Image 1 (cartoon, chains in turn green, red):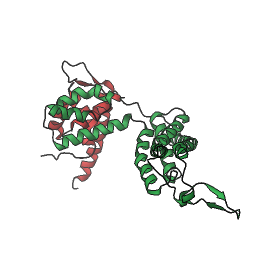
Image 2 (cartoon, rainbow over the protein chains, first blue to last red; image 1 turned 180 degrees about the vertical axis):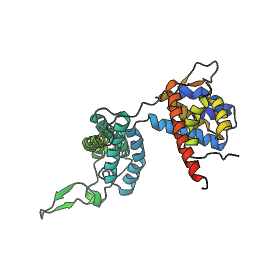
Image 3 (cartoon, rainbow over the protein chains, first blue to last red; image 1 turned 60 degrees about the horizontal axis):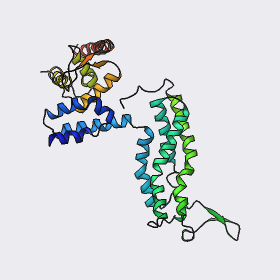
Image 4 (tube, helix red, strand yellow; image 1 turned 90 degrees about the vertical axis):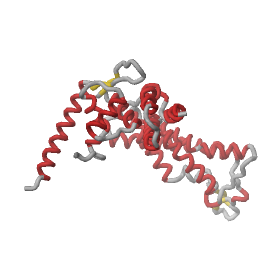
Length: 207
Length: 104
């Protein structure tokens, strides 16, 4: 039983780390009582090690996933998150963090921004797939409708929600359209990192 | 009886591990016991191995081949120099701080 708990605790650590230090820490854990404090200590340090070996774009993308899902459900809009200032800050932060960690060319920060957008776009793409399969019927709220057409008086006005539900294919591929901007914002983050810390990247961590 | 440090440089896991290894190679379990004995600080297993990972990456300590599952770690030359520098810096601050605390 105790061995299973220890193995479960160690599964929070990255595989490379477990290969290197797993048997040693397992020995220590098996030789003393597993108190709540020790379990919390091992868990928090395991997550810390995981964060150290996970790419910033993955961490920030996963952080944005629930926000993207919430905005999608709450605002019924597929673009409100990607057009927000918060999203731009995440992209710049992602590029900055990537450059600080790995250094190298600025394009790496740009690619990190793209990866973040792909991860954060998963809820929207999932909604598109559900719409295609007929399970979901997403209605864009009028305030957030991004398509405008001219009426008979030649004035631009938003299309009414009732007459303009977003097309399923449009929803599915919508995240693709933010990728070029994501690349640029990521690059900007990398540029800022180069300006803040011209010294270079941190030493590598155990994978 | 001296108070146990809870924060500050005297409770820094990396410094405590380096100080422990200054008396010779030890494995993780022995380091925990030694640190508890000389500093009164209980290092959790997660904290201990996170600090060991960092010290190995910085090449301040190095693992040695061990007989069992526990590998002993030894202080490298760079680690010994770094530890001496840190302790000397702490001593300079401690001497001045304690002198200023003394009533005139």
